[in-house]
Image (cartoon, rainbow, N blue to C red):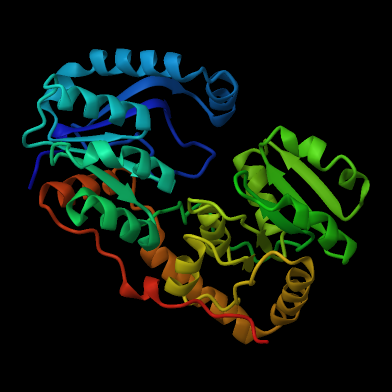
Length: 370
Protein backbone atom coordinates (compact mmCIF):
# COMPACT_ATOMS: atom_id res chain seq x y z
CA UNK A 1 0.00 0.00 0.00
CA UNK A 2 1.32 3.47 -0.91
CA UNK A 3 2.68 5.63 1.89
CA UNK A 4 0.34 8.58 2.58
CA UNK A 5 3.35 10.72 3.47
CA UNK A 6 3.62 11.30 -0.29
CA UNK A 7 0.16 12.94 -0.43
CA UNK A 8 0.12 16.75 -0.74
CA UNK A 9 -3.12 18.77 -0.73
CA UNK A 10 -2.77 22.33 -2.07
CA UNK A 11 -5.35 24.99 -1.20
CA UNK A 12 -5.45 28.81 -0.95
CA UNK A 13 -7.10 28.65 2.48
CA UNK A 14 -8.31 26.20 5.10
CA UNK A 15 -9.92 26.00 8.54
CA UNK A 16 -7.82 24.67 11.40
CA UNK A 17 -10.65 22.59 12.87
CA UNK A 18 -14.35 21.80 12.44
CA UNK A 19 -15.60 22.62 15.94
CA UNK A 20 -19.26 23.71 15.85
CA UNK A 21 -19.61 23.14 12.12
CA UNK A 22 -20.09 20.17 9.79
CA UNK A 23 -17.05 18.57 8.25
CA UNK A 24 -16.79 19.15 4.53
CA UNK A 25 -15.88 17.05 1.56
CA UNK A 26 -12.21 17.82 0.80
CA UNK A 27 -11.44 19.56 4.09
CA UNK A 28 -7.61 19.65 3.96
CA UNK A 29 -7.35 18.90 7.67
CA UNK A 30 -6.91 16.38 8.98
CA UNK A 31 -4.98 14.35 6.41
CA UNK A 32 -3.76 10.78 6.88
CA UNK A 33 -0.62 10.50 9.02
CA UNK A 34 2.31 11.95 7.11
CA UNK A 35 0.18 13.80 4.53
CA UNK A 36 1.02 17.46 3.85
CA UNK A 37 -1.47 20.33 3.62
CA UNK A 38 0.10 23.16 1.62
CA UNK A 39 -2.14 26.08 2.64
CA UNK A 40 -1.99 29.74 1.68
CA UNK A 41 -3.83 30.98 4.78
CA UNK A 42 -5.30 29.24 7.84
CA UNK A 43 -8.47 30.54 9.46
CA UNK A 44 -10.22 29.82 12.75
CA UNK A 45 -13.85 29.84 11.57
CA UNK A 46 -16.12 30.48 8.60
CA UNK A 47 -16.82 34.07 9.64
CA UNK A 48 -13.10 34.83 9.40
CA UNK A 49 -12.93 33.13 5.98
CA UNK A 50 -15.86 35.21 4.74
CA UNK A 51 -14.46 38.43 6.17
CA UNK A 52 -10.77 38.04 5.35
CA UNK A 53 -10.81 35.87 2.22
CA UNK A 54 -14.04 35.89 0.22
CA UNK A 55 -14.90 39.57 0.72
CA UNK A 56 -11.30 40.64 0.10
CA UNK A 57 -10.72 38.22 -2.74
CA UNK A 58 -8.37 39.87 -5.20
CA UNK A 59 -8.30 39.81 -8.99
CA UNK A 60 -6.80 37.06 -11.16
CA UNK A 61 -3.30 38.56 -11.21
CA UNK A 62 -2.96 38.74 -7.41
CA UNK A 63 -4.47 35.28 -7.07
CA UNK A 64 -1.88 33.97 -9.51
CA UNK A 65 0.94 35.66 -7.60
CA UNK A 66 -0.30 34.14 -4.33
CA UNK A 67 -0.57 30.72 -5.99
CA UNK A 68 2.98 30.96 -7.38
CA UNK A 69 4.33 31.90 -3.96
CA UNK A 70 2.57 28.95 -2.35
CA UNK A 71 3.97 26.51 -4.91
CA UNK A 72 7.47 27.92 -4.44
CA UNK A 73 7.15 27.61 -0.66
CA UNK A 74 6.07 23.99 -0.98
CA UNK A 75 8.30 22.97 -3.88
CA UNK A 76 10.24 20.37 -1.88
CA UNK A 77 7.05 18.60 -0.78
CA UNK A 78 5.60 18.84 -4.29
CA UNK A 79 8.66 17.23 -5.85
CA UNK A 80 8.57 14.36 -3.34
CA UNK A 81 4.81 13.84 -3.67
CA UNK A 82 3.29 10.76 -5.25
CA UNK A 83 -0.11 12.50 -5.38
CA UNK A 84 -0.88 16.23 -5.49
CA UNK A 85 -4.51 17.23 -5.00
CA UNK A 86 -5.36 20.85 -5.87
CA UNK A 87 -8.43 22.39 -4.25
CA UNK A 88 -8.12 25.49 -6.45
CA UNK A 89 -7.94 25.62 -10.22
CA UNK A 90 -5.13 28.18 -10.19
CA UNK A 91 -2.63 25.81 -8.58
CA UNK A 92 -3.60 23.01 -10.96
CA UNK A 93 -3.22 25.29 -14.00
CA UNK A 94 0.20 26.49 -12.83
CA UNK A 95 1.48 22.93 -12.28
CA UNK A 96 0.14 22.02 -15.73
CA UNK A 97 1.99 24.95 -17.29
CA UNK A 98 5.22 24.17 -15.41
CA UNK A 99 5.01 20.55 -16.52
CA UNK A 100 4.40 21.38 -20.17
CA UNK A 101 7.40 23.71 -20.15
CA UNK A 102 9.65 21.06 -18.60
CA UNK A 103 10.02 22.86 -15.27
CA UNK A 104 8.16 20.37 -13.09
CA UNK A 105 8.71 16.61 -13.56
CA UNK A 106 5.54 14.54 -13.25
CA UNK A 107 6.69 11.01 -13.97
CA UNK A 108 5.18 8.65 -11.40
CA UNK A 109 2.88 11.36 -10.01
CA UNK A 110 -0.89 11.85 -9.89
CA UNK A 111 -2.07 15.47 -10.00
CA UNK A 112 -5.80 16.05 -9.57
CA UNK A 113 -8.43 18.67 -8.96
CA UNK A 114 -12.19 18.33 -8.63
CA UNK A 115 -14.46 20.11 -11.09
CA UNK A 116 -17.96 21.43 -10.41
CA UNK A 117 -18.52 23.37 -13.65
CA UNK A 118 -18.39 21.96 -17.16
CA UNK A 119 -16.74 25.20 -18.22
CA UNK A 120 -13.73 24.37 -16.03
CA UNK A 121 -12.81 21.15 -17.84
CA UNK A 122 -13.79 22.65 -21.18
CA UNK A 123 -11.31 25.51 -20.64
CA UNK A 124 -8.59 22.96 -19.84
CA UNK A 125 -9.52 20.60 -22.65
CA UNK A 126 -6.96 21.67 -25.27
CA UNK A 127 -4.06 21.67 -22.78
CA UNK A 128 -5.04 18.37 -21.18
CA UNK A 129 -5.04 16.57 -24.53
CA UNK A 130 -1.26 17.04 -24.69
CA UNK A 131 -0.55 17.00 -20.94
CA UNK A 132 1.41 14.37 -19.06
CA UNK A 133 -0.67 11.39 -17.89
CA UNK A 134 -0.28 12.63 -14.30
CA UNK A 135 -2.94 15.32 -14.78
CA UNK A 136 -6.47 14.15 -14.04
CA UNK A 137 -9.83 15.66 -13.14
CA UNK A 138 -12.46 14.43 -10.70
CA UNK A 139 -16.17 15.00 -11.39
CA UNK A 140 -19.06 14.51 -9.00
CA UNK A 141 -21.94 13.55 -11.31
CA UNK A 142 -22.19 10.74 -13.85
CA UNK A 143 -23.53 13.17 -16.44
CA UNK A 144 -20.50 15.43 -16.16
CA UNK A 145 -18.14 12.47 -16.02
CA UNK A 146 -19.54 10.99 -19.24
CA UNK A 147 -19.32 14.33 -21.04
CA UNK A 148 -15.76 15.04 -19.91
CA UNK A 149 -14.60 11.48 -20.62
CA UNK A 150 -16.01 11.74 -24.14
CA UNK A 151 -13.85 14.78 -24.82
CA UNK A 152 -10.73 14.07 -22.76
CA UNK A 153 -10.62 10.27 -22.65
CA UNK A 154 -11.58 7.95 -19.81
CA UNK A 155 -8.04 7.90 -18.42
CA UNK A 156 -8.08 11.64 -17.81
CA UNK A 157 -11.20 11.80 -15.61
CA UNK A 158 -12.38 10.11 -12.42
CA UNK A 159 -15.87 9.95 -10.94
CA UNK A 160 -15.89 10.97 -7.26
CA UNK A 161 -19.19 10.86 -5.33
CA UNK A 162 -19.85 14.04 -3.34
CA UNK A 163 -20.10 13.55 0.43
CA UNK A 164 -21.52 15.36 3.45
CA UNK A 165 -21.27 15.14 7.24
CA UNK A 166 -24.25 12.92 8.07
CA UNK A 167 -23.32 13.01 11.76
CA UNK A 168 -24.16 16.74 11.72
CA UNK A 169 -27.18 16.58 9.42
CA UNK A 170 -29.59 14.14 11.00
CA UNK A 171 -33.31 14.13 11.86
CA UNK A 172 -34.73 16.17 14.73
CA UNK A 173 -38.15 14.62 15.50
CA UNK A 174 -39.21 17.32 17.98
CA UNK A 175 -38.71 20.27 15.61
CA UNK A 176 -41.72 22.43 14.73
CA UNK A 177 -42.22 22.80 10.98
CA UNK A 178 -42.75 26.49 10.25
CA UNK A 179 -41.63 27.67 6.78
CA UNK A 180 -40.36 25.97 3.66
CA UNK A 181 -36.63 26.55 3.27
CA UNK A 182 -34.96 27.78 0.10
CA UNK A 183 -31.20 27.55 0.79
CA UNK A 184 -28.05 28.28 -1.18
CA UNK A 185 -26.55 30.87 -3.45
CA UNK A 186 -25.85 29.88 -7.04
CA UNK A 187 -28.44 29.22 -9.75
CA UNK A 188 -31.58 29.52 -7.59
CA UNK A 189 -34.68 30.83 -9.33
CA UNK A 190 -35.48 33.75 -7.04
CA UNK A 191 -38.42 34.76 -9.24
CA UNK A 192 -40.36 31.74 -7.97
CA UNK A 193 -40.56 33.03 -4.38
CA UNK A 194 -43.11 35.90 -4.73
CA UNK A 195 -45.74 33.80 -6.57
CA UNK A 196 -45.35 30.98 -4.04
CA UNK A 197 -45.87 33.44 -1.19
CA UNK A 198 -48.94 34.73 -3.03
CA UNK A 199 -50.23 31.14 -3.12
CA UNK A 200 -49.97 30.88 0.65
CA UNK A 201 -46.62 29.07 1.01
CA UNK A 202 -44.40 30.47 3.80
CA UNK A 203 -40.69 30.56 2.89
CA UNK A 204 -37.38 31.17 4.63
CA UNK A 205 -34.66 32.19 2.16
CA UNK A 206 -31.18 31.45 3.49
CA UNK A 207 -28.06 32.55 1.61
CA UNK A 208 -25.02 34.73 1.81
CA UNK A 209 -25.43 36.74 -1.39
CA UNK A 210 -25.40 40.48 -0.68
CA UNK A 211 -27.91 40.98 -3.50
CA UNK A 212 -30.64 39.08 -1.65
CA UNK A 213 -31.59 42.04 0.56
CA UNK A 214 -32.34 44.21 -2.47
CA UNK A 215 -33.97 41.33 -4.33
CA UNK A 216 -36.45 40.73 -1.51
CA UNK A 217 -36.95 44.32 -0.35
CA UNK A 218 -40.71 44.04 -0.82
CA UNK A 219 -41.13 40.47 0.45
CA UNK A 220 -39.49 41.09 3.86
CA UNK A 221 -42.65 42.94 4.92
CA UNK A 222 -44.68 39.76 4.34
CA UNK A 223 -45.06 37.74 7.59
CA UNK A 224 -44.92 34.55 5.52
CA UNK A 225 -41.38 35.37 4.38
CA UNK A 226 -38.06 35.46 6.23
CA UNK A 227 -34.68 36.37 4.77
CA UNK A 228 -31.60 35.06 6.58
CA UNK A 229 -28.13 36.04 5.37
CA UNK A 230 -24.81 34.71 6.67
CA UNK A 231 -26.39 32.26 9.11
CA UNK A 232 -24.06 30.26 11.31
CA UNK A 233 -23.95 26.50 10.79
CA UNK A 234 -26.10 25.89 13.86
CA UNK A 235 -28.59 28.55 12.78
CA UNK A 236 -28.84 26.95 9.35
CA UNK A 237 -29.38 23.54 10.92
CA UNK A 238 -32.20 24.98 13.04
CA UNK A 239 -33.87 26.48 9.94
CA UNK A 240 -33.48 23.14 8.15
CA UNK A 241 -35.11 21.20 10.97
CA UNK A 242 -37.94 23.76 11.15
CA UNK A 243 -38.77 23.37 7.45
CA UNK A 244 -41.71 21.25 6.27
CA UNK A 245 -39.83 21.05 2.96
CA UNK A 246 -36.68 22.27 1.23
CA UNK A 247 -37.23 24.04 -2.09
CA UNK A 248 -34.54 23.80 -4.76
CA UNK A 249 -35.72 25.59 -7.92
CA UNK A 250 -32.52 25.35 -9.97
CA UNK A 251 -31.93 27.47 -13.04
CA UNK A 252 -30.21 25.93 -16.08
CA UNK A 253 -26.49 25.83 -15.34
CA UNK A 254 -23.34 23.81 -16.04
CA UNK A 255 -22.80 22.46 -12.53
CA UNK A 256 -24.51 20.41 -9.83
CA UNK A 257 -26.18 23.38 -8.13
CA UNK A 258 -28.24 22.39 -5.10
CA UNK A 259 -26.59 18.99 -4.65
CA UNK A 260 -25.09 19.69 -1.21
CA UNK A 261 -28.29 21.32 0.07
CA UNK A 262 -30.33 18.35 -1.17
CA UNK A 263 -28.04 15.85 0.54
CA UNK A 264 -28.19 17.79 3.80
CA UNK A 265 -31.99 17.89 3.70
CA UNK A 266 -32.19 14.18 2.83
CA UNK A 267 -29.87 13.31 5.71
CA UNK A 268 -32.04 15.41 8.07
CA UNK A 269 -35.22 13.69 6.88
CA UNK A 270 -36.71 16.88 5.39
CA UNK A 271 -38.70 16.44 2.14
CA UNK A 272 -37.22 18.09 -0.95
CA UNK A 273 -38.95 19.67 -3.91
CA UNK A 274 -36.57 20.11 -6.85
CA UNK A 275 -36.71 20.33 -10.60
CA UNK A 276 -34.63 18.17 -12.89
CA UNK A 277 -31.04 19.38 -13.00
CA UNK A 278 -27.48 18.08 -13.12
CA UNK A 279 -26.76 16.12 -9.97
CA UNK A 280 -30.19 16.28 -8.36
CA UNK A 281 -31.80 13.92 -10.86
CA UNK A 282 -29.04 11.36 -10.22
CA UNK A 283 -29.29 11.79 -6.46
CA UNK A 284 -33.05 11.24 -6.38
CA UNK A 285 -32.71 8.09 -8.50
CA UNK A 286 -29.77 6.65 -6.55
CA UNK A 287 -31.51 7.16 -3.21
CA UNK A 288 -34.94 5.98 -4.42
CA UNK A 289 -36.40 9.30 -3.36
CA UNK A 290 -40.21 9.17 -2.94
CA UNK A 291 -40.88 12.79 -3.94
CA UNK A 292 -41.38 13.25 -7.71
CA UNK A 293 -39.18 15.87 -9.34
CA UNK A 294 -40.95 19.00 -10.54
CA UNK A 295 -40.96 19.57 -14.28
CA UNK A 296 -39.79 23.11 -14.93
CA UNK A 297 -40.11 26.27 -12.85
CA UNK A 298 -43.77 27.19 -13.27
CA UNK A 299 -45.17 28.62 -9.98
CA UNK A 300 -48.52 26.81 -10.29
CA UNK A 301 -46.77 23.47 -10.78
CA UNK A 302 -44.55 24.10 -7.77
CA UNK A 303 -47.49 25.16 -5.60
CA UNK A 304 -49.44 22.02 -6.50
CA UNK A 305 -46.39 19.83 -5.82
CA UNK A 306 -45.88 21.53 -2.45
CA UNK A 307 -49.48 20.99 -1.35
CA UNK A 308 -49.30 17.32 -2.43
CA UNK A 309 -46.19 17.03 -0.33
CA UNK A 310 -48.02 18.46 2.69
CA UNK A 311 -50.60 15.71 2.32
CA UNK A 312 -47.95 12.99 1.89
CA UNK A 313 -46.16 14.12 5.04
CA UNK A 314 -49.09 12.88 7.11
CA UNK A 315 -48.58 9.34 5.81
CA UNK A 316 -46.44 6.87 7.84
CA UNK A 317 -45.62 5.07 4.59
CA UNK A 318 -44.19 8.26 3.10
CA UNK A 319 -42.08 8.89 6.21
CA UNK A 320 -40.74 5.35 5.97
CA UNK A 321 -39.78 5.96 2.35
CA UNK A 322 -37.95 9.15 3.37
CA UNK A 323 -36.01 7.10 5.91
CA UNK A 324 -35.07 4.52 3.27
CA UNK A 325 -33.68 7.35 1.12
CA UNK A 326 -31.82 8.77 4.12
CA UNK A 327 -30.16 5.41 4.75
CA UNK A 328 -29.19 5.03 1.10
CA UNK A 329 -27.71 8.54 1.17
CA UNK A 330 -25.63 7.65 4.24
CA UNK A 331 -24.44 4.47 2.56
CA UNK A 332 -23.28 6.33 -0.56
CA UNK A 333 -22.49 9.90 0.50
CA UNK A 334 -21.47 9.97 4.18
CA UNK A 335 -18.03 11.29 5.03
CA UNK A 336 -15.77 8.68 6.58
CA UNK A 337 -14.05 9.38 9.92
CA UNK A 338 -11.53 12.26 9.77
CA UNK A 339 -8.65 11.61 7.38
CA UNK A 340 -10.07 8.38 5.96
CA UNK A 341 -11.60 9.90 2.83
CA UNK A 342 -8.21 11.34 1.89
CA UNK A 343 -6.61 7.97 2.57
CA UNK A 344 -9.18 6.33 0.29
CA UNK A 345 -8.60 8.89 -2.48
CA UNK A 346 -4.84 8.44 -2.21
CA UNK A 347 -4.71 4.65 -2.07
CA UNK A 348 -7.27 4.05 -4.84
CA UNK A 349 -5.47 6.55 -7.07
CA UNK A 350 -2.09 4.96 -6.47
CA UNK A 351 -3.54 1.51 -7.09
CA UNK A 352 -5.22 2.68 -10.29
CA UNK A 353 -8.60 1.56 -8.97
CA UNK A 354 -11.91 3.11 -10.10
CA UNK A 355 -14.09 4.79 -7.49
CA UNK A 356 -17.01 2.51 -6.71
CA UNK A 357 -20.55 3.84 -6.97
CA UNK A 358 -23.84 1.97 -7.41
CA UNK A 359 -25.16 1.71 -10.97
CA UNK A 360 -28.61 2.68 -9.68
CA UNK A 361 -27.46 6.30 -9.80
CA UNK A 362 -28.20 6.20 -13.51
CA UNK A 363 -31.80 5.00 -13.10
CA UNK A 364 -34.51 7.52 -14.02
CA UNK A 365 -36.12 9.59 -11.28
CA UNK A 366 -39.92 9.48 -10.89
CA UNK A 367 -42.07 12.12 -12.56
CA UNK A 368 -45.23 13.70 -11.18
CA UNK A 369 -48.44 12.10 -12.32
CA UNK A 370 -50.29 14.02 -14.98
